[in-house]
Length: 80
Image (cartoon, rainbow, N blue to C red; front, side, top):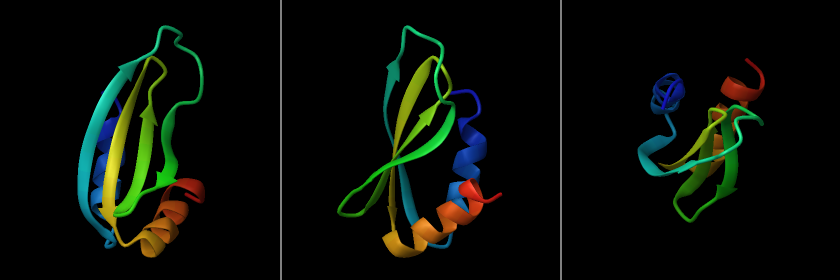
């Protein structure tokens, strides 16, 4: 998906990340809405993220140290 590679490079640079697992891609009929990387919820092994580009949504599962990942995610994507 267009623009996703930039986010994946940043995520893979986090010291807390052990693995990044792509999930399904869902196409949306409407091309409006939020775009970017979003933290969806915590899993047993890390977090589920969603990447939205306007017409599609890509699920991304991150296996990580959850506490440390959350700090790195906030510092990188919420306070650039």
